[in-house]
Length: 86
Image (cartoon, rainbow, N blue to C red):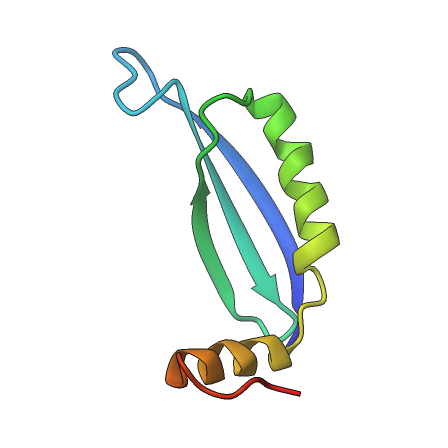
């Protein structure tokens, strides 16, 4: 299972704009068909700049992420003071 796809959505927030002028959501999908939704919060970045920024971070750090990462996270959660993985 690899993380394979990213989509971003900028949603405008009409006045009185409680919570900000816009919201940025994203979806991640794996090659197995598992999907997740999240919100990106960056108060100082305009949404036209935020989309390419999210894409860059995705390509550098998330795309192709393997199941082994998930296994390491689960191991670390189960052994907070424990042994290092080799």
